[in-house]
Length: 78
Image 1 (cartoon, one colour):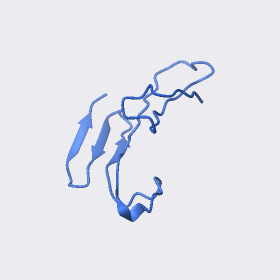
Image 2 (cartoon, rainbow, N blue to C red):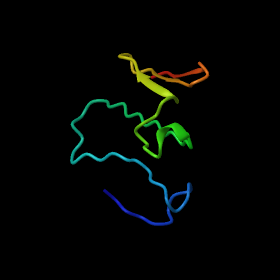
Image 3 (cartoon, rainbow, N blue to C red):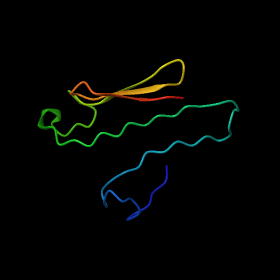
Image 4 (cartoon, helix red, strand yellow):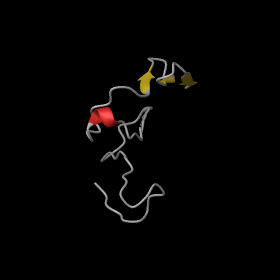
C-alpha cells in the first residue's frame, strides 16, 4: 500500500488502485480495472452495493468487453 496526498487529479479525497508483485512470474498478464464514479442514492454510501452500472468481462481470447447500463458495449481487442 502506498500513501500520497495531493497527487491525484481527481481530488484530495480520492484513491487510485494499483497492483504490485514481488516478482514477475513470466508470461503475459492482462490486468483490467473498472472505476465507477457514482452518486447513486440506492447504494446508501456503500461502494460495493452497485445496483446498476457498467460491467466488464474478459474473454478467454483476451478481449475486454465493457457493457454500460444503456446497453452500449465497448470492446477492446487483445
